[in-house]
Image (cartoon, rainbow, N blue to C red; front, side, top):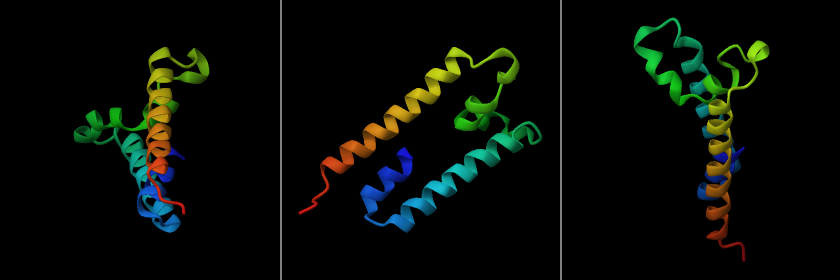
Length: 92
């Protein structure tokens, strides 16, 4: 939601915001899914939020503190960025 809100405020276009945010999410998912199989893609999985959201056997061991911090930081930064961009938006 944070990335689509930021893009939407920046471009003023809902379709562009949803399209770009969907493309980013799909790319992050593909990177995370293909990283165990494709050797040169393995280091890039650390960029994907899906790595922190579903990795490391969380159903058995629980969510790790570092994964929680990374996901919370991403959410806070993207939300703050959207709010800051909305503050500069001329809605008159």
